[in-house]
Length: 340
Ligand SMILES: NC(=O)c1ccc[n+]([C@@H]2O[C@H](COP(=O)([O-])OP(=O)(O)OC[C@H]3O[C@@H](n4cnc5c(N)ncnc54)[C@H](O)[C@@H]3O)[C@@H](O)[C@H]2O)c1
Ligand SMILES: [Zn+2]
Ligand SMILES: [Zn+2]
Image (cartoon, rainbow, N blue to C red):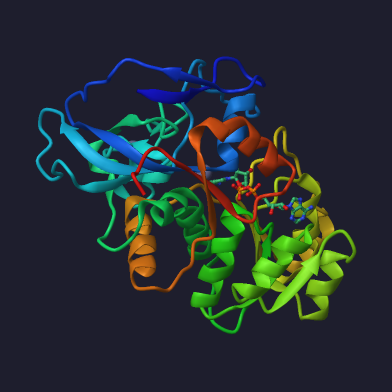
């Protein structure tokens, strides 16, 4: 089977033929149809973060496909069923985080495409309890971006506790941001979308953003303050300064939700303003299985639109360059031979 492999950090991925894989107990083998390219895959391939994967590895945590083999003990999935395999490949199920609805904080978790091989391949293994059934009528090409970009931003808005009549700033309208705009609108908020390219700002407006802010030309904090200041700012741009700009546009009591993970990212927050204004800074990492089920349900009900560009896996290195140059409208999804 064909896979895109990171052999060494910072080097182009290599398309390789790999031997077939057998599911272990509690696992399934998935014949991947579609696999979304998340900016996290790029961080993984470059070794950007303090905790690094171990090359060689196959990135990809937006893999969607059909179950083709069941490991021992798997009874709730069946061969031929369509599933999505998210970043949260597995969690322990016993720790305080797992037991209190925060399995995304489990210290024993294994991350797909990082701690084990991921979806940028014709076949992959998944732990059956964490493979999310995809509802009928949701295409694998839509399900793929929802599996990380969707669930992560849906969760970030839950963490921000967004309410109708609030102003939500979405900083960075990429793969994640284009869905964040839609979830914030579904929550009833007024949405200010911030980016640095005309195409992304145009897309944000098309998806329902009420205010668009071009961070190249405008002072983000000032514009947000002119609208009363944001109740929540969701930081999705891979740029330290964008976090600071979004933070400067919060109203009193506002929340900065940190989601993007720039390499060696650090943010300087003014202590005086943070104390005086009672603002908070919250980190948010992906979402739970329940969050993903809700994201799929919303999409099946026609409430969200996934904007994607479908490409062959062989384009992986050009695709990474296109994301880094900001030339992708929202999400690239690799077609792993879906037969479409
Ligand atoms: N916390 C989590 O659970 C989680 C999950 C998925 C992804 N991520 C991280 O989120 C980040 C975004 O991922 P993505 O796939 O959406 O990336 P992306 O490249 O598709 O989107 C980033 C967007 O930010 C915009 N941008 C760049 N500089 C900007 C600036 N100064 N101000 C405003 N916008 C700016 C870009 O034009 C682009 O539209 C990555 O760092 C990724 O690793 C985190
Ligand atoms: Zn991701
Ligand atoms: Zn746990």
